[in-house]
Length: 307
Image (cartoon, rainbow, N blue to C red; front, side, top):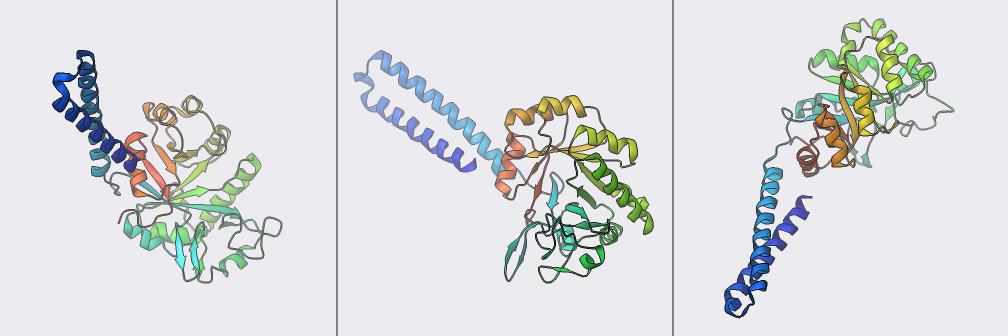
């Protein structure tokens, strides 16, 4: 959008200058009606130039920083090694680095191992030889190096990070939409926290919810302080989100695709929802979404976004 605004601004300047030159050279020869049209066109172009300059200055001056923008590290972010670039690794290795860069919210994808313990993974893509029909055991998982040298996330190693960094939070993407599945998943989560004497950290974990029914169930059966409703599964309209979640204090953020319309976003922000957008990796795009769609924050793979 920034580049488009610059193009429109230059085009408007060209039209304005052309009209001014024509008026200056041929003023006495131009019929009154044409004079009026040229004056009107020049005035309109001046208004466009001022407006475009205003929006460009807003984009250029807008700062993306940890104080003003919620930034969620998405599934460990982009991981690079000698063989390439990788997404969705759900590994713990860059947690310290990303915290130091300004991240305070860390989102991970979680599944259950074959022995029903919680492990970090997204569709088994880096767990060679395993899949949904042949799931990995917890013991095998913790002894497997992702991409050769990375350690996958578990409740245990995430708890250690939360103890180390008192203002860090973990966002759960369980991708569970059936009540039986998310019931078993979060019961196991509470059990694992209890086993390592970390139940006091329960509210440093923020589950993502995928439907209003899931919200009701979680509130009735678990004691989390905060949830994030993310819309990519239920695909509620903006008005439905407002109707279902307005006044629900435990809904900390609403997460939507960055491609959602400005009108959709306006309905949410007009009702005081804090809107996060996923997945955005370009700082200029974040600036534009913050200004024009009033995004409160972003999920990102770009671990250098604050640099």
